[in-house]
Length: 569
Image 1: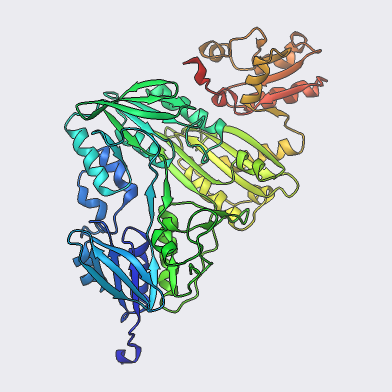
Image 2: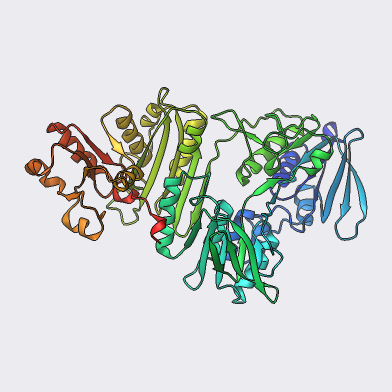
């Protein structure tokens, strides 16, 4: 009976890292008889690029685990042939597409021999390539990237040989920060150099990036922000210094992590449409301008679900999700990939980082009329021994109260909060929808009111005029401008003495004493209250307003959100 379903369909896939193998696996499950072929230029296929930092740090000891199944079998050509019925050719670079005759010419990278592959449906998973910045002497020994498995092996060999003591990482996006986490050690000096002003630019808002760096700096990471790397210097062919427009940094190892660009050369030469982002244009079915050619992963542009604008977002999650869609469609299905929210998570130096949707800077640049709030809280009940502090920033559109974005950092759990927010945003959720979510609670998992919901409540208070706030950055700027106001610190004397803002305008008065000592608070000046995390400061502001004080605000996130002034170091 199986013969009734025989298929002569030829599915040819170019690219064998994540998107290609995912497509092949899905297509094979749906069409047992299709001829499925993968061409991969490199040596390894279906490998876990996201696992490379864990290999470098020693958390993954066996290199083979990066390209093995969960049950310990290496994902090599033999595996794909025996378990998937897929023909895989490694070391085979596709060099041209003949769309009229539905053929691809490929070249063996070792022998130069060319071979023709025919297709009915062609899939482009050509990925991206690392940006090479205009920096002199990048060919020196000790200069690395972290984009391919071979890169991880090379860096690991240098680390194990004791050759790496002064590391400079150029770029602080996701790859750069993963590199930091992999190589950071009290035994090494690690410095990041970033052309923009804070960590994870474009991923976190500047205030969140600054607070994240504060934590890293306290652990020993050096940061050089707003600096442009001009050249590298070396001795005997090995790098010794990084020269920027503001100075020099000793280095015996340099990791370039300045981002990637879509690899569209093959598609462009075949006459496929390239979009405004520089990546391949695809529709919701992941078809290119040629309906028999699909593209996915790091080589395509995506649609942002909130703005409708085209964006380039090279992330493993999109490559894998799109692989399932393309696997459906090359076998006759009509699955769709609607778009993205830019959801991303990171663990680095003991800190969790997560974000989704639009940041405040992005939203304002796009013309949204927004309100935002920064809240410091705990990820679970404060009395639980595993509880940790987190900082959440939420952005909503004022008139619709539509949730636009959320960012979180801290030692505590932030990823699950961002995932809930991403789900809300996918369905067009508002702030009021968020406050009505039925989320789980038990002390080891959560607080009775989830931190994200708590953040939403604070933002609702702000929108409705119940909570009048300044951001920590705004307070800092008011102090710097010399404005005449009182910064009323309502923490206990012990907390105040441990760490406080040094300024003549600061007054300490414990919250529990405030009602009895209102006469000690100047009634003719603006009062800004502050505490550890913001809750007591909010209570103090309401007490003062209830007592007739007219000009009262509190500082969001308290001293936990106090910005780190890099100019002091």
